[in-house]
Length: 43
Image (tube, rainbow, N blue to C red; front, side):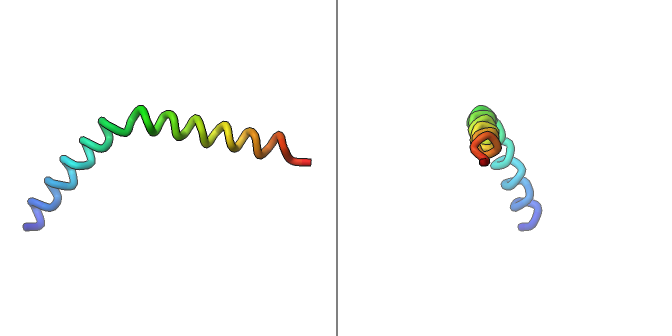
């Protein structure tokens, strides 16, 4: 049972990694943009 869970998690992680790679890139860019905005908006 434990081995099946580990294999399932590994497969799910690979699928999520393959699908979410581009969206993660967009999210990190968005976070960098917000961070730069927060720094430049400081009085």
